[in-house]
Amino acid sequence: MPRYRYSATSPTGQLTTGVAKAASREGAELGLYERELRDIRVTDRRTVLRAEISAPRVKRVELMHLSRQLGAFVRAGVPLIEAVHTIGQEAQNSSLRRMMAEVEDGLRTGNKLSDCFDRHPKIFPEFYRGILRSAELTGQLDSVLDQLATYLERDLEARRKVQSAMIYPAVIALMSVGTVVVLASFVLPRFKVFFQDLHAKLPLPTRMLLAVTGFITDYWWALLGGLGFIGLTVLLALQTETGRYRRDQLLLGIPVVGTTIECALVERFSRIMSSMVAAGVGLPEALRVATESLHNLVFIRALSRVGEAMLEGEGLAKPLADSTLFPATAAQMFRVGEQTGTLDTQLEATAKYYEGELDYRIKKLTALFEPAVIIVMGAVVGFVAIALVSAMYGIFNQVKV
Image 1: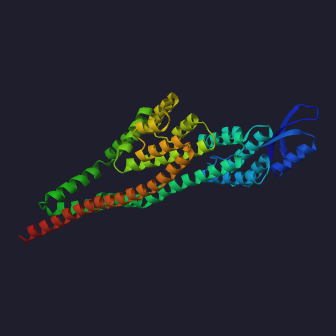
Image 2 (image 1 turned 120 degrees about the vertical axis):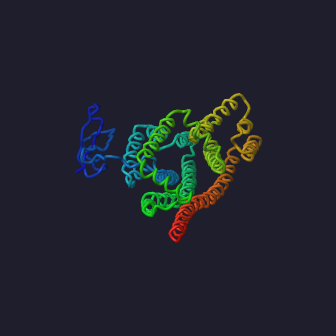
Image 3 (image 1 turned 90 degrees about the vertical axis):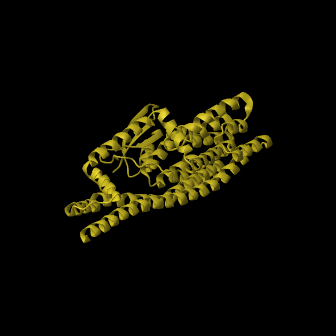
């Protein structure tokens, strides 16, 4: 039978703790209540046998469903503690179930929902907690939870588009690498032995091909060591802020790829800003949280200067336009929102516009990547074919003579 740790107040007013056996958490609470204990807090007691080597991660899709369910419960008038308890009991993810139990304990002691979520920053992003905190102050918890669920759903959809668009090019690239490895490791060495036995004079393409494959075959350990050293160097460089900044700067400078990344960052920034401004979060705080959510140091540094300019009274649209990172279309939409007092609406419109633009750019990037991989693969296979055919033709002529 499961064991549960508990803390409660005894009839004499003293705090008592211990372990209770029960079939469920509710059974443990009921048994403690029958013992005339009050202010009961029950948590799972995880033994060595029940301990999980690696607790499952709470995915964004689970957070989306949690937000939608919680919003529906609040809108229906269900008490918040009861809603959290029900969602936690029905959760399939053990980490989510444990987290909701801790949130329930926090609510029972008088904490706000946002305060309870603050204790789980790995599950609830900062913008999520900031929006929720403002919703509690304005009394719009149900509608804001629906907005958060909608945002998470759109964010997940954008991620799925990127992943699905990269599956086919990744498969082509993997097959290309596999083909080259098979040719260099198994096929060409056998031809090399065949040519050596004939003592024939080989054409230049064949000699080049055999020299490359011979080097790979003889010094594969050095190549692997060099690649490992380069990879380790890059990994260590990316641990520093300068290294990450250079990486982000390089990615933004790559044709087509850079514009796609820029479009994705603008869409994410606009979406989070729109949700926070609509929830009543102050513009400086919304800008800070939206900036930190981008995970791109080039944008983060530029937007930190935008925040400083905004605090000096320059507004939001002008500093964003001066940063040169945001397209003129986005800056113009922000300017209209500031002038008409509809910044949240314009931010939402910007997010929707760049969501469609991102979808188009991803398709364009995929359309360019596929033929590029095919051309490279065709050039490699074509060179191998020319080298082998020319060698065979040359040997035939030499033997014939």
